[in-house]
Amino acid sequence: MEEGNAKKKIMVAIDDSECSHYALQWALDNLGHCIAGSELIVFSVQPSSNYGSVYAASYGAAPVDLIRSLDENCKKLTLGLLEKAKEICSQHGVNAETMTEVGDPKEEICKAVDKLNIQLLVLGSHSRGAIKRAFLGSVSNYCVHNAKGPVLVVKKPA
Image (tube, rainbow, N blue to C red):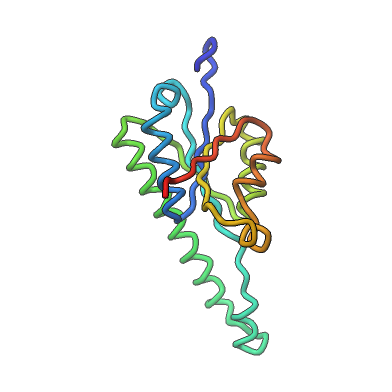
C-alpha cells in the first residue's frame, strides 16, 4: 500500500459501542498487511454537549462548575476509549496515533478525513433498522456519502 516514500493514512473512527470495537479489531485482523506500511489514526468524537436538561433543572442558571465538570468527564471518557484502542493496536504490533474532536460525529469524521488526507476510513455499523436510522441518523451512511475517499463499513455478525 506504499507508493514511493509516502505512507498511506488509514483512519478507524470509534465510539464506545461494541460495533465500533469490533470494527477496530476487524481492521487489525484483516487489514494488517495494509496497516503495517501505513499511518493508522484512531479517531473519536466527543459529542457536542447538550445541556438543555441541566439548564431546565436549574431554571436556566446551571452552575459553571457543573458544566465544566460534565465537559471534563466526557473528555476523560473519550481519552480513555482512545487509550484502550491504542493498547489494542499495540497488541497487534501497530503503533497508532489517536485524535479527538468535539462536535457532531458524522461531520467531524468527514472533516478529519479531508483535513488529514485519509486514504481509507474504517468504521462500524450499529445495524439500525430503517425507522431508527430515519430518527437517529446513521454516521456510517453519512460518511459513505460525504467522506472524501473510500469508506469501509464493518458490520458485526449477528
